[in-house]
Picture 1: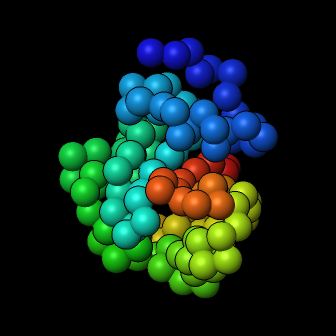
Picture 2 (picture 1 turned 90 degrees about the vertical axis):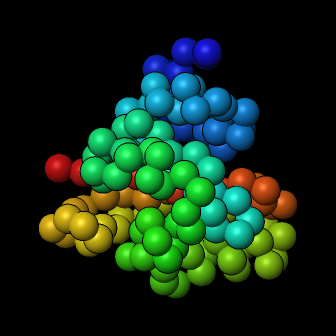
Picture 3 (picture 1 turned 180 degrees about the vertical axis):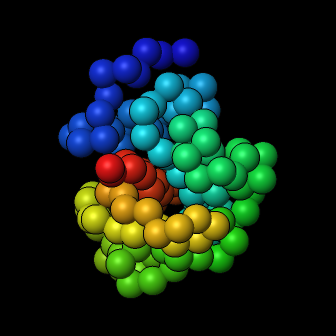
Length: 130
């Protein structure tokens, strides 16, 4: 297991780190990490996000992100940005303020959308804001 305590939500090299991380590595991070494949199936879901969202890792892994886990992100701001970047074979690194609404009262967060140009794995990072 690598020590990741110096990695921040804003880190410019975070995509490279995420692509090479184990679930145990991701569980060290102080923000939410949701990793999903080309079909939108969640493959990585760290402990921080599980606790913050109130959804266990075992309940989320293997489920479709934008229809079962986080349908509140199934829109042009989030899901469509991933599809557009993949269709254009462009890397994606976009941070945006967002309000999560599923299974909770509206909660302000920052989302960071990350994907390499040829995305076998894509990521939504979640930084909860006060």
